[in-house]
Length: 246
Image 1 (spheres, rainbow, N blue to C red):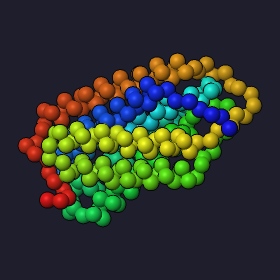
Image 2 (cartoon, helix red, strand yellow; image 1 turned 90 degrees about the vertical axis):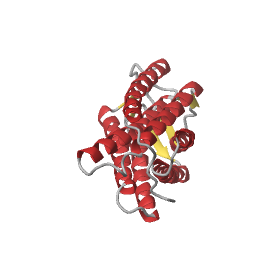
Image 3 (cartoon, one colour; image 1 turned 135 degrees about the horizontal axis):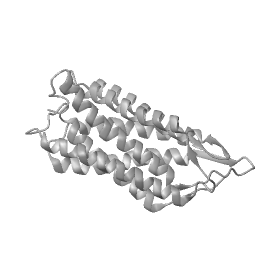
Image 4 (tube, rainbow, N blue to C red; image 1 turned 120 degrees about the horizontal axis):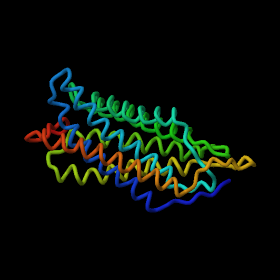
């Protein structure tokens, strides 16, 4: 079995984008409960799900590139795109379930479970997109643990999205969400077991290219999140709408 190593700098970068995306997403999601049905609602759901789901996806790929697999690795473009759509789509569904209609613990848990399963599906679809000269299997207990973490993180994220009044609270919560998202990802990575298949494929991929690709993903994500943050700041409500615990 191949022993992998982590680039600590890229691990920290992956956490940073998860925190930034969580903060921006929280500031956008609080518009959903009071949004008018139709285009206004779709607008805020789309922006908040792109912020949160997109940041989770970015964190995921930077986190994968943080791992030195001891061999060249490339990624299947189709599966990579599918994984991103899974993250954004399931976050959007969760936001609609929890942020609209009558509030209840059942809706929170149901939306959180569905969103968490979607995030886990994103993660393992992304893992399946890896192309390398090795076979991949999973440690089942760790795989299940990663899915449980994803569900718990999703429930917490959806609760926080609609139950925070102050900017400082959302800022602090973003750091907690970042830990939860990264926890799910790196437990999922720890569940991965790889065995080299014999002949090393030369795909022209080095760890230096992983670092440059991670930087490109980080910069691109930061620009998008910066634009979304600008939109959020220009459309700030007087106070967040509480869904639970009023």
